[in-house]
Length: 234
Image (tube, rainbow, N blue to C red):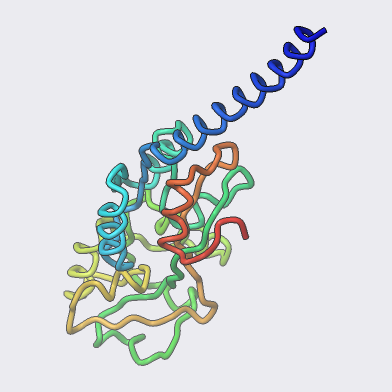
């Protein structure tokens, strides 16, 4: 009878011990896991570089890659990245969890002496006869612009697609005009350019995103809280 009693107590002790080991293993994994972050190449325009520097000094097991839209989303889908920083439009699907980070605006950029420069705001119809220089067609900004023109029933006159630096110089010398994120334009100094909001503002929200099917580790949770200043459980 004593042996039976001891056996029953031993089973309970073993179960408690096994449960405790499992919990500690999970805790250790979540705290020691390397955090892999992918981002679009826009850290400078949103003043995120100092924040990344401070976070990685606190948590060295954090890596960061700057890649373009398609590679960014592919990396998240394949599990190469735990979190990505992207424009909301490319992760606007139910399978993603998003954490708002920065709000930007799509603006029209044109030479200061352009006939439309005196207008406080512009409509898409104002741009019908204008030559447009847009960002490369793999970017979410290009796709946003094309969708706007399509919805307005307008066929845009696209001169060519190039990167931001080349676009702004081409606009300054009068080759055409462009549509860009406002914060991208503010990053560069061009004396002879002006930007104008659209009459129906188009917001470009920047978010941190993860797959809903992927658990949020403690490391990732700390990163989100650090950048957004918000509780991830809300």
